[in-house]
Image (cartoon, rainbow, N blue to C red; front, top):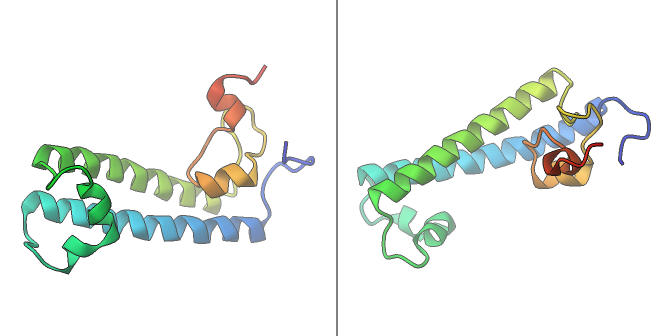
Length: 128
C-alpha cells in the first residue's frame, strides 16, 4: 500500500492531481459539447467532424443516432460531475482517501482514474 502512515496527500501532491483533473475536465466538456452538437445537428459538416473525438465516436458507424449520442452525453455528464466532485475533495483535503477503508488510494490508480473514491481492493470487495 502507498500509505506509509500518511492519512492524506500533501498539498503539492493534491496540486498535481488538481492539474490532471482539470485537464480531463476540459477534454470531457469538449466531448460533451460535440455530443450535444451532434444531437441538435447544429454544426453540420465543419471542422468538428474531423476532431479525434468524433472519429472515435463514428468508428464502426457512419453516424451516431440521436439516442446513442444522448446516452453518451449522459455518461459524459456523470463523468464531468465525478471530476467536479474530485476537485471538491481536493479543496477539502480528503482527495485520494478510500471511502471504504479510509486508507490512501495509490497514486498510480488516481493518475489512471482521478475521480476514484475506492481503492482497487475495496472496489473488488477484498478489504477483509
